[in-house]
Length: 269
Ligand SMILES: Nc1ncnc2c1ncn2[C@@H]1O[C@H](COP(=O)(O)OP(=O)(O)OP(=O)(O)O)[C@@H](O)[C@H]1O
Ligand SMILES: [Mg+2]
Image (cartoon, rainbow, N blue to C red; front, top):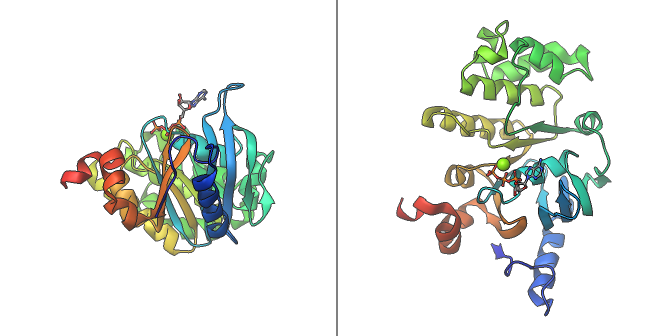
């Protein structure tokens, strides 16, 4: 596991730990499916939310992103999906830059995004939501419907029901299934367990793992940090728009600094 040394890990005066961290990222991200390098991004001119972030996900990996409220976790996913202005650095998928690409191009290239909120079309039925997910390749509908119903059998019973009338857990399944319709290589999930009962939260984590096992690489942002680190291969801790810690999920979970700073009650668990 590696730790960034303080607020300006890539900009400190000595440059020593900066060089080590940067080198570690560059070595580890070699051949990654999707990577962000030295990413600086923000919404409002001259206000950077992400500051020199590094990130990568390998083919087949499940990577978790945790950190306090306002750390920039959603912003990182939105930057990957072209929804935030990237000021410095680059984001690449299989070596191809994603900067400046529109949402439909990103979906076509294999990026699926499930936002934190408002992630279904509430007035459309479950089936229509799936059709929206596949608007670029409508002929694949029945094949992809079978795939998502295999993952989420409950959607089959709810096929003709409006998404807005479903329970929170079912809506989250619709949102994930919609993003999966286009057969993404990498799925970005922003807090999929938020607002769900403990039992349904558990179900979302199990489903996420199952999706990953079907060969989809997953980047998962989660408030439920402990559960997230339990299921992910690697994790990143973001703090104030910067990389704070990164490493194997199990290493992060057991690191006393990560526990005391970011996992709260985990220390007593
Ligand atoms: N659309 C926006 N316009 C301006 N600032 C924004 C916007 N969205 C988020 N921010 C700011 O960016 C910072 C990071 O927000 P972000 O949503 O990425 O955090 P987060 O880590 O996902 O937090 P949470 O755990 O609460 O979801 C915050 O200071 C937030 O106020
Ligand atoms: Mg967020």
